[in-house]
Length: 122
Length: 129
Image (cartoon, rainbow over all chains, first blue to last red; front, side, top):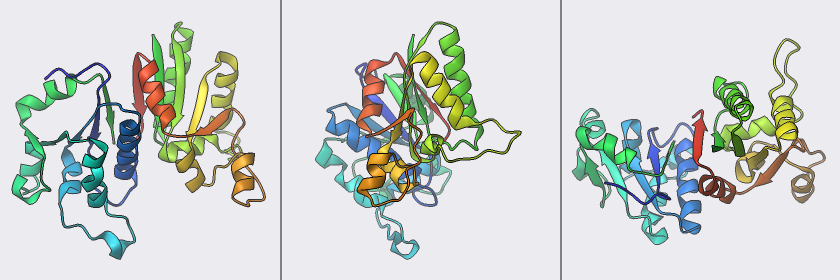
């Protein structure tokens, strides 16, 4: 799955709350989109928790990352990938996630990441 | 080769030291460092008022020194820096603060500088998390 050389993959590996790294990744995604740079997102490890739709972090005074995820198509960021093994090991299934994610299995994820010109992990 | 570095961790973490050591080694080997972009807790590297203990390395000073010697562009993400109280004179006055503390070797600017670094470098390396 070779991507154009200026393509960037942002890998999200941290849970949505407890630290600000997830939001930092989204800010970069939106900034890159504003500069017309092709961006794809890959969620793996604890990053998959970000994709659960019904998030209400108001009780911990945090902003919902789900809302930001919902806004991505407005910025023409449609390529959202999930590593299947990270879901399985956390007892999650793709049906529980927000819509429009693409699954990658163990054998695909390495070559998928390798296909990008740039990879930045949050 | 032309490198840019993305630093996400504060000066108290090993990752910031690794970034500086990489930058120095790359420059010594004849490579170019296009930009070092400090994001999130990485922006603490620009706090000129940080006072390390006497037997510790002054991380802020040595980044500034590297920048002066080798003309390395040091950029603090402005949103991350403001949140953490790292302000240059202009931002301090704009926000009604009585003092500024950003080291003059660092420039406060937006995420566009990271996108630009990514486009104008052969490699962008991330340090820290």
